[in-house]
Every structure is written in C-alpha cells, then in structure tokens.
Image 1 (cartoon, rainbow, N blue to C red):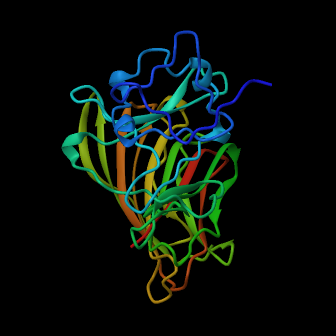
Image 2 (image 1 turned 180 degrees about the vertical axis):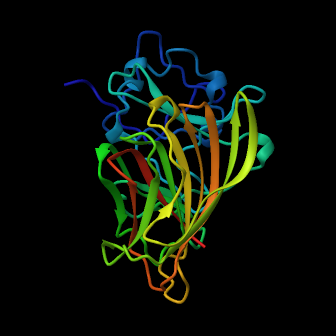
Length: 318
C-alpha cells in the first residue's frame, strides 16, 4: 500500500505555484481536487497546449454522455455562422457518413428570428407540412387547392366515355380537357350529353351553336359552323377526319352543374382538322339542355362508331 500524507492544504514554498515534478502525476480520482477561482479563470484555450486533454478522452464523449439542456432563454446548442462565408447550419449524415443533408439558417440580411415548433404527431400519406391556423406551430394537413383534378380516363376505342359522380358542393365550376380525341370512322361528329342520376339524358331538349375559324393553304374564313335546336345531343364540331396526327383537342367548361334552378349549359373551345381538304379549324360555342335539374355527369360519343382520347375533369372552387 502506498504511503499517504493527509493534509487540509498544500501551499507553495514561494508564491502561489505548486509544481508537480516531471514524470509525476497528481491523482485526485478518489477525492475532490479544488482549484482556486483565479486558476479556473485563466484555464482557457489560450493556455491549454495541444494534448493537454488527451484525444482518447475526447473520443470517449458519446451520445449517452452528452446531455444538452435548453433553458427559457438559451438554446442547448448553437450552430454559428462565419462572417462573410456562410450562415449557420447543421448536417445530418447517412449511416456511412459519406453524404448528408443540411438545415441552414436564413441569410443575415433577412434579420430572421423565429422558432419552428414541430407537429405533435406524424402526418399521413399525401399530407403536407404547413403552419397552423394560429401561426404558432407546424402541422400536417391535407393539401387544399382551388383547382383539383377529379378524374382522368384514356381509351383507345370505346362507344362512349362518361365522367359521372364527381360533381359536388365543393366546387362551383368544372373544366374538362380532352386531348388526342378521334372518331374511329371518318366524317363523324363529336357529341356530348348530360347525365342525371348516372344515366344519359337522351330527350330532344338540347340546343347548341358554334363558330368556326378556318385556315388552309387556300385561304381562311370565320363562319357559324354547327347549330341545332331540340336535338338529343350537343355537337362540338362538324364532321372531321380520324387522322391521329391531327387529333382533336377541347376545353369544355361546365358552370354550376348542381344548380336545380337553371338550365344546365356548357361552353366549349377546340381544334380539329379536315385532313382530306387540308382545312384546320378552331371551334368555339355553347350548348344547353332546356330542362332544369342537377347534373351527375357528362358523356362523350360520336355520331357513329367508337371514339378514342384522354378525358380529364377538374373542379374549381368559387
């Protein structure tokens, strides 16, 4: 057993310095070593030489030993920026520490000084992260939009295409985009009917009228193209070819389809071609059903034969 000398205080032989001889250590592992305040105040980076705290000791600082505490006024950790170089940021690495993502402060000029409070729970599929209604914290919520795609269908060949069951009180206005439309048989007419209670309205109570802008190698014109009254359909275009390189495209607007106090109507605009004579058309017009009542949908069909194309329905909030 080593020899021991127990004392309450060790004083230097001269001045305030106690020197530990070269090759010797001061072991305070079994008790407390109290240094005077004057010694602690000068214990800083400028007078700690390299290796004073062994690297082996630093590498031993693990997650379990790092217990950072925030207070009401002080953050537990601060990622500082460097003047003229970069704003403060933290990096989160992958498991192999070969790459990572950074979370960075706004630029100094913004004067930003705010706190982001995380949501109290994890969101669900397709939700977005947004500020809550009180602007006090982040929250997960379902994305809301004033222009929403409700349905989309594509057919290579079908007798008709119906978009039904998508009208609701959520939207007051609907738009249908039709692309790559073709009639299977040449010289046929693209037509539509409204639907009620999931069935086509086939009575002869429709009217329609449209104008035509035409351009060909031989000239151009502006004419009233197609019109009808007491018909069983609304005609979108005159007879046209079924060449895929000049397929039809249409934009069809349907205002307030659930309104039971007015006659339902559509407004349409489109392009097509009579490939045989080289005429290229723009068609624009309207159609109306002269019986009131809420609509459930709309059907596209040809005056004869099958149709093809893509049909997309969007709802627009008021």
